[in-house]
Image (cartoon, rainbow, N blue to C red):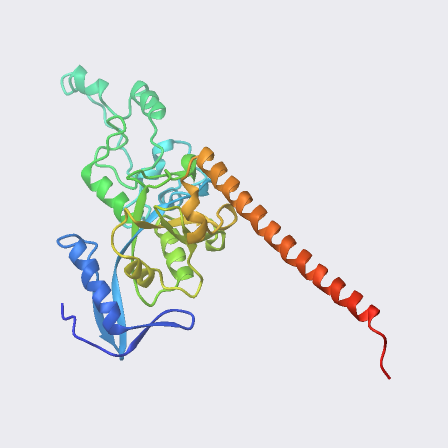
Length: 326
């Protein structure tokens, strides 16, 4: 990458700017830290606008469950109302179109042409096999089947797994349906979204929620930069999260970007964060020292104004004793 010296300014928030040269220096440090990883960032010029783009790691910091959308596959392959069998939804083509049911010819099969007993027991039309299949109905209905209505437990074919992954992202590798549509991600678990430096905080929030098909409104959440010291800084709606991450530095052992509820988190300033990780006895000793210092200052003020009061009274007495001159 060409980190040439530039003098133009790049916005990093409302009425806040940083020189392109300084941002490029931070970007160079950032990419050196993630050398050989997919978290490296790229920059480009578009209509005289400097744009940085790449993946941003965001940690889950939610305390309440989130609502996930129903599986879209369920809606697309829902059987017709007249259907009386659970596998009637399998009469779908590759593009989701309903195929005409095959008419089974009425053919008399002699005993000589009858299939072996082992094949008869494995037939998908056998009533006992159908009962087993009904008990083993998967939570995610299939759009196609290469073996009719026969299933092998909960094992999906590689093509089915690839199709599901293309259709929906997962949280921590798990795919959800309507039975697990209310879920709280593990605190501190990490996900990422691909964004650029022109996207504001609300835009990043909407992109993240849409990635995982979360029904909650983006207004319920906020992004926070959380430091290991305990300092919590809320990103404003006019801030650019990717630029904020670059300026904070690449090391996530120092600071991370968290997704949290607005009404569950309070910002913690740097001055307050210095005392957060102390034990209670240490904090009590700090309070005692501050109390002692306050008492000393109060005594100094009392002595000061006591002396001033005496001086004023003495002067008033001298003026009262002196006869008035005409």
